[in-house]
Length: 251
Image 1 (spheres, one colour):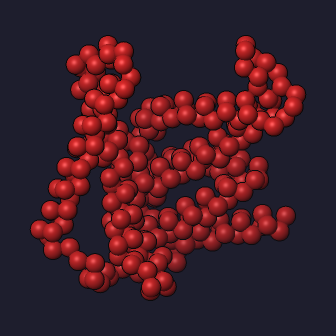
Image 2 (cartoon, one colour; image 1 turned 30 degrees about the vertical axis):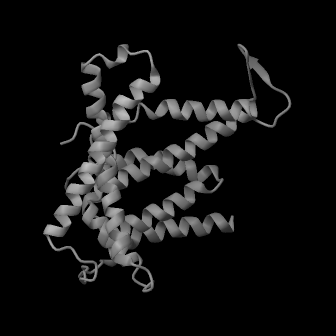
């Protein structure tokens, strides 16, 4: 298994792994819509249910949390930007930086929603294989006959597979450069060149290998895909989420 688990499909036999990918995709779309709404009860409900869902998925939570430590710097920067550039007139100075209390609260609110969105998206990618995602998108786009459904579904599956591969390549290059004492180079542009150029070359090489593999296997977009029957019980969580969405509009 790859060193980095985040955004990787982790095989298993949990309830979420056995859940049909079409139901999971619909649930993810409705969950993202509910999180984007400015309603505190929805955010609290999804924050409380997230640990329970992780337990049901039987994922290595500790390793997944270690993989997300680098994103904390990005979240802190978002909060500081909101605090500094807030439109509130009255500001309180922390050291030499003028920070707005309302801006900091708004930044924390944005980070809260962003963390929930990324957490549920990472959970979806951990329990859904690229093949299942492709079939789910084909099923979702079935009424839209004018769209290239096979191409869209195939590109979505490749994205789910390729993004963690690129991140793994980046981690491997950084470890190799660290072993060669590149960190002693004080020129940041030169250090970035030692990482970006090998990453770009490896990514292009993987894309070329993938194209040759598809051509060797005779991949065609016009071949029909037989989808399995979707049990109605797998749509029950989606119905509950839609009911929660409708109740939020009525309140």
